[in-house]
Image 1 (cartoon, helix red, strand yellow):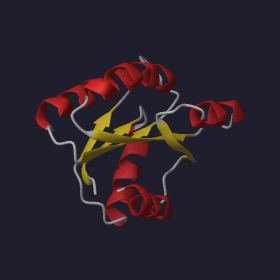
Image 2 (tube, rainbow, N blue to C red):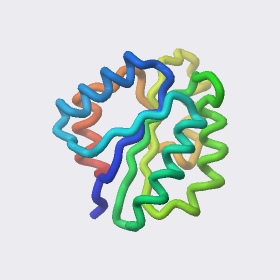
Image 3 (spheres, rainbow, N blue to C red):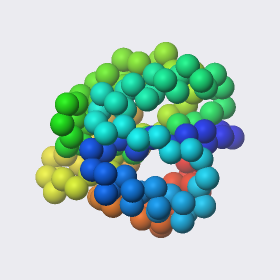
Length: 135
């Protein structure tokens, strides 16, 4: 069984990150929460976590937005694919997007690193389901 070590929110919207932190708390998930305000910061956070977590039983849960400045979610996924084999921990990656383009959802679900796609915002129900199925 994997132990949830950290939750990584990658989203450029301060309000969404604040709301998601509250929802995670209400879901009785008490792991530390890191925030990356764009894909580049998300990659930087993962690499920093890789310096401190050296446990193949640890899990980092990633919630990734698609539309962000500097580096969007699609570019994040490309770099994530390159660095994933070097990570000392497991990851579960979910897209959380306000995109209404059905092509975005299809493209995300076809990515082998994406476990699911959720519309913004996350809900307590979604997190309870994830906790039961993935954590």
